[in-house]
Structures are given as structure tokens and as C-alpha cells.
Image 1: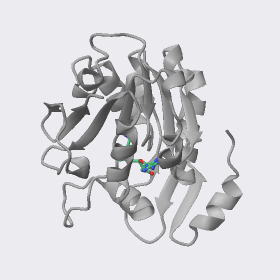
Image 2: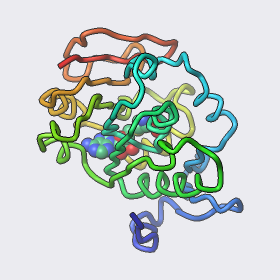
Image 3: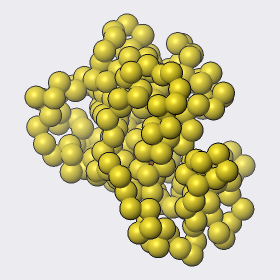
Length: 226
Ligand SMILES: C[S@@+](CC[C@H](N)C(=O)[O-])C[C@H]1O[C@@H](n2cnc3c(N)ncnc32)[C@H](O)[C@@H]1O
């Protein structure tokens, strides 16, 4: 899907600037705060290392360590890192993002993949500019979605060095995902397994206890079985 960047740029000014950097990567910078620009680059060394980690909790949480070819609906795609890791390990991913700027950055990252050799499931990842609250209103049983994955923005912590610069610019642009509880409630109406990524000590979405959890150093995955 091609987006009209001219219109997006007008909507962002004067707080943010959307432009291509010297490497031809679309990036979002802040005009008012000293944030590092954000962009989507799936070819960065650090990210590729993460992709290759077969033991990461995300793969265990969705079950890709045991079963190949799962279909996963990522209902909060953001810059697509988690989606990409899942596709890298063979999942068919449908990634939904509601914000047009974040979606444009994600599209840019995926378009530049063609120059590199990545698994077909990554290059062919489906993306939609869509609010998942609307998407989840449909009956998805015909689409054979095995997993619905949710990673809403974490609740705002007090100004903390722990909030990465990238997260700061995202939080300024997007605010909080205050409908995250509703997303879980709607996802639970589908017949899929639900995986929710949370800060390790964060409250449960909707206050709802998961069926089981996978806990890592700073994050955890809450898994809800239908
Ligand atoms: C924390 S980020 C996701 C990061 C992503 N998992 C990654 O690995 O890059 C959360 C994203 O979910 C998106 N989001 C939140 N609610 C949404 C909804 N109802 N529909 C679609 N996207 C949504 C936000 O716009 C934001 O970009």
C-alpha cells in the first residue's frame, strides 16, 4: 500500500519531521526534543542477531519452537520487529498497525528487504493500515488464525532512564494504548490462542489472569487459551 507522504508530513509539522536519511531510509525525527530518529531497518546487525535466536521467549510463547507454519495476526504491529521475528521463523504473519506514520515506516523497512536474502515469509509479510478494534469485530474463523499477538504500548512510567529513546519518540507520537484492555476482550472472542507481551512486572490486560506465562528478564508473555 502506498501512502501519500506529503499529507503525512503536513499533519506532523511542526513537532515532527518525516524524511529520508542519507542511506535512503525513511525516518521520523522530533523537531522539539532531543530524541533519536526512529526508522525501520530489518537489516541491522543487532536485530539480525535477535532474529537468529531460536530460544527467545516470543517463539516459545506462540509455539513456533514446536510447530511450523502458524498463522499469526499481530494486532499491534508498530515497527514490525516482533512480526518480522515470527515470519523469520516461518510464521505467516498478518500485521495490523493503526497509525499512518508508523505504518509508513514499517512499509519502508519491508520495501527495502528485496535487496537482501530473507525467508519468503518475511518478504511476503502482509501488512494493513487498520485499527485492530475494527478488524477483530469480524468472525476470523475462515482465516485460520492460530495466534493473535498483542504488544500494546507499555503504560507510561515516571521519567526513567529505562525508557529507551526510541520508545520516548513513539510515546510522544502515539500516546498510550488506552484501549489495550478492549483489544484483549475482543481477541478472546475469536477461537485463537492469544499472546500478550507485557513489562515483566506490569498488570494483566483487563485484570485477566492468563492460562500460563513465559517470563524473561524485563518482559513476560501472558498466554490465553481459548
Ligand atoms: C509497542 S508498539 C508494538 C511494537 C511491535 N511489537 C514491534 O516489535 O515493533 C504498539 C503499536 O501498536 C499499535 N496499536 C495500538 N493499538 C492498536 C490498534 N487498536 N490497532 C492497530 N494498532 C494498534 C500502536 O500504534 C503502536 O504502533
